[in-house]
Image 1 (cartoon, one colour):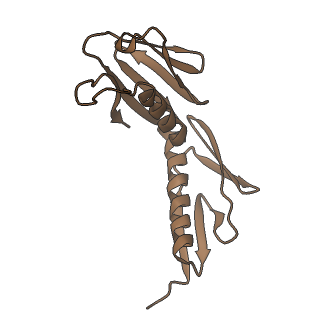
Image 2: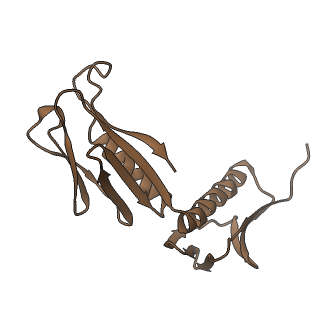
Image 3: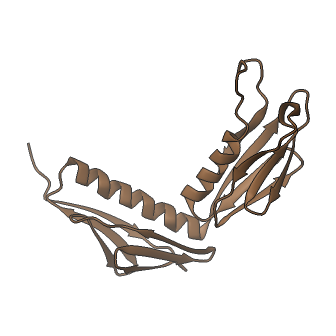
Length: 179
């Protein structure tokens, strides 16, 4: 079996996007903002290569190849975030009790879920913008893919049905689009 001596992933930076590496922390700046993330490994190297970035590892083993591919995906997500951003669309579905949604500071609040008197709450992570449109649509957007996805998951999870049949009681907030 042939052993590959070097794995290299090259990431091209589009016009208007710059990257800086300092002490294992990569900072990517673009038209929409700035995202930072720590990349630390004893074997995998993150290098600045002219107008782009390169993830390199010599004599890689299976887990190290996987780590290099993961770093490559994270960096591409950072570049896409500062150029285009990420947006998730969630929709509110209810059958009898009309629930109302609103944003209060760093929390998303759902009132009247199944007629409950106590509002349900979900955390909004920093750097994420959440807005309610048309009384049923929730738009979650930002430049950090993980923060946007986790905030959308928090909102979806705050309306889980407990002690009822999910096939009958289908009220809740569900993700309908991801961009």
